[in-house]
Structures are given as structure tokens and as C-alpha cells.
Length: 270
Length: 322
Image (tube, rainbow over all chains, first blue to last red; front, top):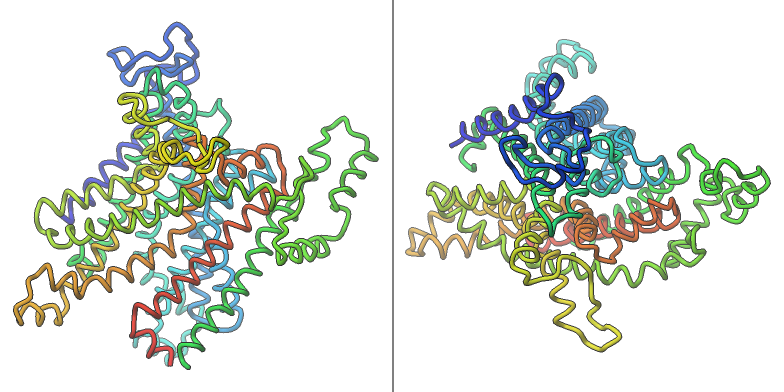
């Protein structure tokens, strides 16, 4: 049962990654080829998932769209880790007023959901995938600050830290050699969970028309465009929605599975 | 006395966070590079026209002064004036707020009510297939974005069955008097979309809250004195589950408000979210800024309420504060 979520998570994430990788070299059709006679076709052997209102092959567009999804997720989560983990680490080791201020600011930022931050940035800078990625990344920083801070505090309470201190090890060395390796697994679990939040946020922004322009295939944007024809055919709106759900479910299950592997004490509760 | 102190401290933190949040929102909207006046008038505008517009909007004043006067207005419930219409933002928000309040205010309690039995059943049957089914459903409900859930509901209930309208809104008190049926029929699907997402998430935490209690000694004691498993779990687990619910609501309120913004887009509801999106499209920054601050204030206020609720629900916190 526990292995199951890890395996299913890996399988679903693998599916999305494979679709993105294959789309780099091959897609069934040109993902931007407009063919009006073929518009709104249902699923068939020639178009596995059917076509959209422009006659574009949905599967091809979905495959290319997975690239944007993964790219936004990777960049946003990496940004959040690179900024958030060191801040959490430092604030956990040196508990001064600066750390307190840092934590307060990250609490305030925490009250600003990724999508709202993105909407604010888009209002000022205009809609683009880059702005969306930045916004999602920045909004995810406080998650990692809090998590790294809490994890660092619990590591710092261990005896081996006192031992290291009494040997004259510097704070920096303690952070890098003792704390970081100990909190790394938790960071990994959080990264998987944050990845699915990032995918949801990007999809939401694209759906609202606040991320990618119509020419860039993204899953959220495809749903927005597909919704127009909902009373004619549901497929162009539902197919990308399923893709988003698969990707999010995959990363959620992967995160759950990883956490169970890392922390046997939590297994009882799953 | 200890409780009063704890409450006072939390209210203090709330006020400071509130101030901090206004700074953050102001900085993002006002201090980022880019000249709104220039962008509004376009490339063909003369420098004199741009300067005149900047003066009219008060953009020629230093940032600190602008922040101060904005904050002073906020304290009096004045969110500023729209660039586009010149009307007061607060006045424009009021009718929109009702729609969003209905949406969030109806879906939250329904989600909580649905998640408690679901979480209890999942905890009870956690080693059986029934538990696995509930947990799987909640995983799927969490993974599906709210606009996907909404569109699926539209496909089923509007397109296929034709029972409910696919979009639009009727006010409860319209020009033709009280219109309960029209109002409710337009809210069922939007509310249901939010409920499915929220209840999926909540039930997962409720389940873990109950499962934690299952391992406790006092539960074994209750069983030993002859209570049934269900009765013991409901009696002792409910408080623990309530803690989980409060925690998740506090953590997720931001996401829920954002979900409401998206749901308004799915169902073309004239709420706060659609107002925000229109303002973004037309770069009406005072409106964007006003709505953003309003949303953040709600998030912070709910966090404060959750903090206070902890003290009420969990007696251990009371003694710890002392």
C-alpha cells in the first residue's frame, strides 16, 4: 500500500516527463498547424484525442504543453529552494532579531497566495510565462523558509551538534556538514509537494489568461479555449484538465511515497 | 490572565502583519519599474500629457507619501479611486463582494460538514477497501484543478442533463423581488466545485486527526470500559479532528479565495475575482491593489481567528501560554 503510492507517483510523473521528452523530437501532428476542416473532431485513430476549434491535434498540443508545465515547476521550485532553504537554515542556527524579522516577513508573504502574487505582478508587468514562473517561485519561498527553519531547529537540538560545537566547529561548517544533510530529505519531500502546487498555480494562471499567450500551448490555456465550445464537444476542455490532474496526482503521490520511505514513524498514519 | 495575554500578543502580531502586508502589496504594485501613465496613454502621447496624467493620479508624489495617504485611506475603509472610471474602489467592490461571500461562505461550511464523516469513515476503515476508496477519491479531488472540476460539473449537469445553468448569476434580491430559485440554481455548481476541492483536502487531515487518536491510550481505556469503537472515536477524536480542520482552514484560506476567483471565471460570476481580472486586463492598479489588500486582510484575519480557536479547542495550549 505504501510502496503503491511511490510506484504510482513515479509512473504518472514518468508519463508526463516522457510526453515532454518525446515532444522534443516527435509529435503526431504539428502542434500549431491550423486545419479548419478538421475542427472539433472527436477521438479517432487519426487523432487519438480529437482536435480543437482550430483543427489542431489535441494530443500533439498536450505533449508540447507538458514542457511548459514541467519547466515552470522546475524553475519555480528550484528558485524557492535556493532562496528559501539557506534563509531557513540561517534563521534556525542564529536566532537573533534578524532571524525573527525574516520569519515575520515570510509569514506575511505566506498570506499572499501564489496566484494572487502572480496576478499582482501580471497587472504591473503584463502576462507572460516568465512572470508567472517568478511569481510562483517567490510565493513558494516562504514554504521552504518555514520548513527549513523548523527542521533546522530540531536538528540543532541534537547532541551531536553540541559535540561539534565543543570541538570548535564554526557555525557555517555545522550548517553545511551537519544540518544540511539532515534536512535534505525533508526538502526533497517538500519539493515534490510544492511541484504539484506550482503546476496547479501555473495551470490556473494560464486558464485565467494571465500566463502564456494563445500561441504557446499550455494545459490551462487549452482548457480556457476549449470551454467556449463546451456545448458542442467537451473533449478539448476535458483532455488538458485530465493531464493537469494526472501530473498533480503524480507529484502528490510521489511526495507521499517519498515521505513514507524516509520516515518510518509516519507510516502508521497513512 | 494568561489567556488574555496570549490573545493580546496574537492580536499585536496580526496588526503588525497587516501593516507588513500593505507594504508588500504597495511595493509590488507601485514600486516595480514601468510607467503606468505612459503605458495607458501609449507611445504617441506627448511628455506633457503623460505628466498631466501622472499628476492627476498623484504619481508625481514620492512613494512614501503615496503609501502614507493610501494607508490613511485604508484605515478609513477608503481603497482609493479607479484610474479608469475615477469612482471609489470601495463603492465598486461592495456589490461584487456579495457574490464572492456567498460563494466562499456557502462552500466552506458545507466542505467542513462533508469532510468530518468522510474522514471518520476513512480512519475507521483505513485497513479495508472502503477506506482506500475514500482516500483515493480525496487524492483525485485534490489533484483536479478547481476549474477542471467545475467544467466537468457543467458538462454533466448543464450540457448533458440540462438541469442547471452553465454560467451567469441572479442576485437573491433582484429587480423582480426575492428570487430564491434563480439565485440558488446559479450557485449550485460553483459552490459544488469549491466544496469538492476543499472537502477532499480537509477529509485527508480529518482522517489523520482521527487516526492519531486511534493510537492513544485513552481510546483503549474507553474501549476497555465498554464503549464501542465508533462512540469512543467520535467522543475523543472529534476534538483532535477539529484541530486539524482549523489548521487546514488557516493554511488553505488563501488557496480557497484564489479558488473562488477561478470559479468565478469558470461560471462567469460577477464577483470580486472577475472584477480583479478585469482590472488586471485594463491595468487599473488602484483596483488591483485594493482587492489584493482586501484578500490578504481576510487571509490574515482568518489566521488570527484560527490562532484564537486553537486556544479554545486545545486546553494544552492554554497552560503552555501561562
